[in-house]
Length: 427
Ligand code: SF4
Image (cartoon, rainbow, N blue to C red; front, side):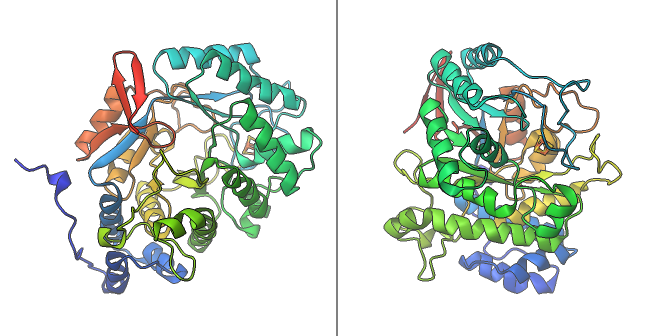
């Protein structure tokens, strides 16, 4: 019996909102969508056509594969010099609930996770006012020493800028940011997570996270990382005070930066267009030299994954807001897949979306649901405890039920092959 997940996508998805017809045609033929198109995808009541178009693109790029990984999140401290209004994670020093882990504790937790099969340690924290730069490099070195094979994905852009400041290299100087990254790579850093991008908009920045770095600096950190050959992710925190047009603008900025990051590879692979744009989400006949950078051979740094993050009001200063609804989450993820045509992957981050919603998202553009996680303290879904853990069985079942084939990946999206407690990547 044939697997329905392997059936070819419909060539012409039904568009019950007639205004979506020309957008659907352009997606089918592999053209880039405009900002206006993105706004229309937000305005249409026909959300199922939006999801079905995103599913078409996602199946063209990844077939029936859906990725997960075995990872461990470590939040080294929640003490932060800032107080962003949407954040319920931070504490001030001495405040009830404030904590800070020692390097030994972090290395021990990382080693335990690696011993249990984790291929990735994901580390982020607040902007600690007093920890020295050496704490961060020693943390990476200690993990590297205790667990040599584990990939360390660590520090959001605002943390990198904080490290540039505390190490005396200037808060927003590009060469200072780059030299901090070089030190961190030397100590064991493998890639950057995508957090802290929020929404690239001056109005939203001033109203919701004044004091945090602005869009240009966030983008500089990732550009510097890409120039040094690091992969990174990007996020968009939506569902608070921003408008749909600001979300689309955010996606457009990321898309442009990714065009630049992928430029040299795309020229070589023959997928760059005359205007320098890179569209990876078209029909397969457009990509005779390969649609996606091969993680095993491509040395370029670039954004691997877009992760739309729903705002969770919880105990933040914006707790009066309701947060986005389920359909809004689904629509935003689908639009991210359609607009970010040069991002290889779209993640349904189950910890914030919930696993049932992540299942739906697999059918609306997502090809990745993140990992086993174990501990996530940054944002938790209402009334959930911070100890959020899904077993491999939970993730695989969620993926299979959604009609896809679970593929364990490492941080660089190489398939992981397991043999009892041993694992290797499939190059
Ligand atoms: S979002 Fe980050 S920088 Fe802002 S208060 Fe929370 S931990 Fe600090």
